[in-house]
Amino acid sequence: MKRFFRAMMVAGIALVSASVAIPSTVNAEGYPTTDGQFSGTGPIGPGQTLNLTVLGRGGVPATGVDAVALNVTATGASSDSYLTVWPTGSTRPTASNLNFSAGQTVPNMVVAKVGTSGQVSIFNLAGSVDVVVDVLGWFPSGGSFVGLSPARVLETRPGLPTTDGIAAGGGPVTAGEVRTVAVTGRGGVPASGVGAVAVNVTATNPTASSYVTVWPSGEQRPTASNLNVTAGQTVPNMAIVKVGADGRIALFNLAGSVDLIVDVLGWFPTGSTYTGLVPARLLDSRPGQPTVDGAFSGTGQVGPGSAMNVTVAGRGGVPTTGVGSVAVNVTVTAPTAGSYLTVWPTGATRPTASNLNFVTSQTVPNMVIAKVGAGGQISLFNFAGATDVIVDVLGWFPTAGSYQGLTPARLADTRVLPPPPPPVVLTFQPGTHVVNTVIPPGRYIAQAKLGCYWERSSGFGGTLGEIIANDFRSYAGPVIVDVLASDAGFKFDRECGPMRTYGAPAQASTVITPGSHVVGSDIAPGTYIAQAKSGCYWERTRAFTGRLADLIANDFMGSAGPAVVTISATDVGFTSDADCGTWSRV
Image (tube, rainbow, N blue to C red; front, side):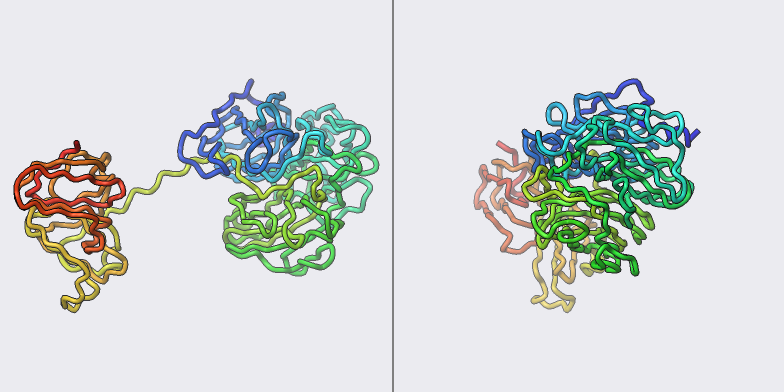
């Protein structure tokens, strides 16, 4: 039953009658996006659709855009499901861009035609899933790329449809088999004049660990891979594939048998600004593995927090000059820890974005359209652990061509930030304490009695020179002390009572009682008045270290009468004694 259910999901057959749009406004604190929009909107639920604004964001113009290149990542899924991405306002197609299992994190490249209101729609079939979207570039209206609503042109599983009934139910691709698929004249692609197609390829039901290579029909099969799978795994990946002379593309499976699904996303005309290539390997960090020209072969794993610059210009059919962006397939393999990989133009600031997300020992491929940076290179950054990386080039776009590559920018992150952990509250008894060993530095408070004495010290020799600051309270009330990391010791007596970590109350008060108070937390800023006795003393401070340098202002009243003080919002502390009595905000 589980196998059948997953098969239906990969096919893109809806199990619900209609999709429900979800709001795009922030409903909780979320992970950042490039402009704060579509952050923390919460997971996309079963049968729900998120309409994501792409125009006017992350470097994409507000007008004149036909399609956008996006990296879409599904994470934290509560059940097996799939995502479909298509132009808002069009009928949702029978296609899928990402297929994933519960708890899995799956990225995939998507080229999506822009729909009404400058948006693309993202549909989730089952369960709930968080979605992260990074924009990589855009195609202008009237340019050489023609975006389509996704259409299925190959479905090897029996009983499942394609857009026109052709190439449906042909059975799994067996070990060493090459299966060719007609792409011209189908799914919105013209019958002639097509140089390359953008397709989403999904492998499902593999019986063994294997890889799938996609290339132009009639050409020699390259040493490259587009998808890497293990037995029972479902893996999607986008590819921009040069179309063979017969209007077809070829797919090769190395081992076992595997069902393959191909959805066409758009096409490039012959002689357009995009030049499709027979895939060529530009980087293989594994020892002894070849590249197209021997460069960047066996370079070793990319370590934690490390970046690697890879030359793409002048290699594998890419010209030395005049190249704006390259279409590459990037694969990580044998990672030692869960991590992510970011690809961006060399010389630019590394963006807050990811192209591949993976766990220990996993092999994950993803296509990337990367703007070429300084020295004709692209940069790859690995967050944690170490991993081998493989890069295959699929084609290139010229400088000032129809594709405008961008430094990746995050357009959506539905994940809600987890609540911060509760503060650690420490309580310690009167005596002398070693700072950074027995107690950490921080802000502490005590409900003191009359006669409370404390001191911060630079040592334990007992000399006056070692006293950094101290205080003696001639009245009862709260005592607050900032203990610094540079202090050696902190001492207080039994009249102070136990000290505990300071914690802000739920609401700041407009009434001030004798003692020390944190402005903005314990008490609200403003102007206060008190009916004071003779001897009333108050002070405004920048901190609670007890040093004279922290004193902003103070006063001592030699006679009884009204006392008035204005406490600024920039003040840190306010202290007054028992002779001042209670202050009320005016």
